[in-house]
Length: 327
Image (cartoon, rainbow, N blue to C red; front, side, top):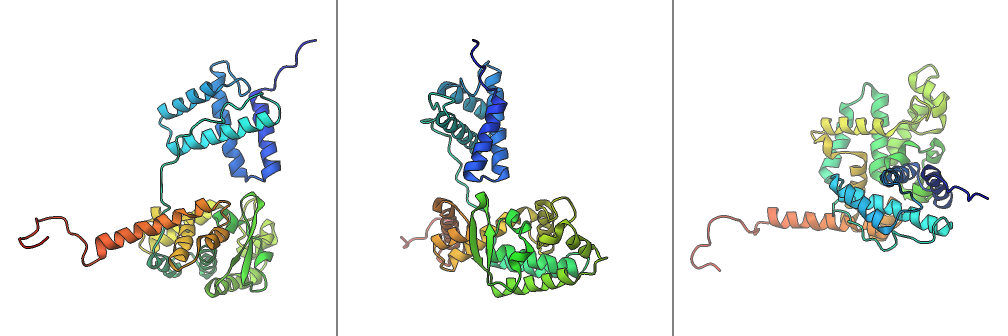
């Protein structure tokens, strides 16, 4: 009797992604990244008559060296190795392989990179620019609500655009947010955010049925706080990015420095500056690991150094040699 043919790599990758989705509730973008990384690795192996089931530790090291030679960043190479590790761990647990060739491989590590953020004055300038954008008062009211919620809660843009309208009814003092992997967290709402939210809800609820907004709330967008045309029924990331770019330009800021994620970083940095502890910020941001949140302490360290070196009246000045009698 002929021995069954082992599954092909695409089938193995699909089974792995199904298992990850079921066991961890991984977000769609995470699954897509795993799939892309493993397909690239599989293609590399296929060119050498190898497969995911036959690849050795040396084959993985050869692949990572090829990624380096191709000019891929350390972060990309680290992510690809992480995807391969997830796969080999899965294959061992499922009995698809008798070993885990990636278990002791050292990754390239990620380049230390501080999150970009904004000063409080820059955030205030963005709020002040709301009155300068949009075709009408409805668009400006929506923009005010969106920016207030982003800065008041530190939500990811994907969490904001999919926020159901029923979650914000009744003038809530906190929002229940569903984040990555389906994890839920409560985030308090300040007075300014609640005022902006109430103003947008009033316009949204009272929009005539034959108006553009009324048609949106009567269709697929009925369940979302920020309805929009399209199958999804809600604003997408690109629309939010364009809105924030326009606000940055109107505020006199470099639009390349202002994104939804930068506003999320500003939320965390300003909380830390105000004395909030890291555990609280971790909970508010929905970080699974405290080490992810700790990066904000380095942002503060960098600001402190800049303050002392560039703004303190006794900061050392490079230039002429010291005069006689000084030490």
